[in-house]
Image (cartoon, rainbow, N blue to C red; front, top):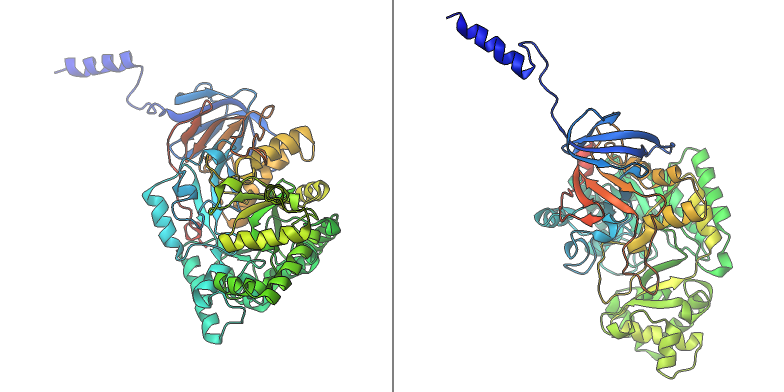
Length: 537
């Protein structure tokens, strides 16, 4: 009988353990060893190892004695929080496009983006839970969150008409905001330059913003005007946040049209004044001197009342057509036309893909028509009648871009989406926004320190919508992480050749799972739906 305890003790001595010893530490999933670690908190990097267990960051420090299933030597590289694109068109109007067509989201992953926030500019799917279900049925490599769109709600309840809502309709609109917030929207977006949002009064939007405020949401707005009336539009956006009782954000803030270049001095002063009196105002911006949207952005607002059929009816009337034409000529001169038809470049014309990538001057010349703003206006009306197009508009000044970028209330967002090679000629922001910020504006232009730029694309947008466990590298945070080479990170997409992936990203992890490893896509799709209700709102 006494032999068995002796044998047991002998076995214990061989394994190097004792009856009261601590169990051996479990392997970490991943160790990122020796990199420059940026917390996301606008602070200089520290050299440290970062350890992941499952979907969380569990250890930061000297982990050379720790074991891991995967150890990556990232010496000399930047270990940063996965970037959060707070203004994304990842879910597009066209069925089966965007994140559904390219769930790997390679154009974003190769920049270090791990989370996108959709539903901008007043446009979102309704109900938002249907989109959540569709994405969950075909998971993506990136996380997805959304705002609820004021314009979508107005179209659902009122239609495309230029009129105020009845009391009953306003109540229905409030109900739609409340439903979306309960389902997990992070706030209310508006597109007050686009129909039908442009037909709403400020007071209407304030009433809906109050509903989002009750659920801890923010208000984010494509303002009514980004050109001649930019100052009025900034004042309106601030007012909606102030009277609606919620944080407010000027989205893709820019100054459009040469007559207004330099006015960012005044718009930023307005933001500073609002902040000083206690209004919670922020900004997002894409780092380019061109915008992109539908050709109808150059049409007068009154011509869009009632939707497409009503517009086509107006264009069929010679007097009305001339009124529309005169307004388009004016907008070419003073607004997104940049005072030159060559500044309007078609990016996607579904009815005629052969003209994608051509500007209005080139098309007029091809058609053997003289080059003039009047003929360009005629061409625009013809293109819209044929089915409409999206376009890129070169009408922004670089100094305004840099001034807005430096402001402490500004974060960077793409206003792009999930793209892949196609016959479209989209804005290069789809492929390059975040890499351009870090490569061109930080490294080459010295516009911002690297750690400040990282803050503006990680912790800052995360905190703006209440994602307390993302956008940061801290113990306990979700392991959304990018490993980049600060010396080589750069955008490659150009306006002429936009379908080019950014360079400089080595590894990207989403919820602790590698989606980019040693520069190669892994095919993993660990992205999840993020709901505001998950964060206690």
